[in-house]
Length: 271
Ligand code: MG
Ligand code: MG
Image (cartoon, rainbow, N blue to C red; front, side, top):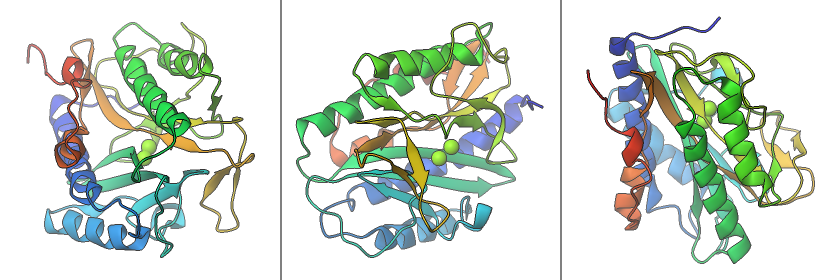
């Protein structure tokens, strides 16, 4: 069953999502060659607890840490370790927060130093597809409209669209209905209604779409060893339009990136 949220509940989810955004912001300058996932994980946990939240992933489904750190051919759900990042790596970092009974959950893929043009393009297209998906999260559309927008943008670049993992509803639980696949048909699936809150999260591979789970029962790898990218935002449907609850602005501020990609989805109109 899809749980529609009140504006008060959406605000609480926004607070949790914003704490995730700030957490990704404070670690973003430390996602460099020589740093390790465990170092970032400690920083993130401390920051979240200092700011009144709890790590949202820790202990959930047996996951042991605050951050999912997924380098290169790891798609998602990587467990932080002490292997230093290297120049040219791409590192997806996913973070969750539970605060005042509601979850925030979003992710960004970072570049370590200069990455190759094919990796750069994968990250660009994956992130673009996230915003294209968000743009379809409007009243009257169906979940399939979001899915198709993401799929289409990546398919034309020849990328593999992960099918075994999907976006989801978000609220008092980290994973609520509906599922939001990154592939699908326009006009199909559940109807998009005001009060829905979604985590939209394309997971896109430079090679084929097939993935497998590692022996740790968590880490998801590409079968062909190809590089994978992952960007995730939390979005509410308010007054028939998508309202962004999370932001990459804190990351961009730290890294000196100028972007207006979020502008159309930032304003809570007519409330
Ligand atoms: Mg996530
Ligand atoms: Mg998620």
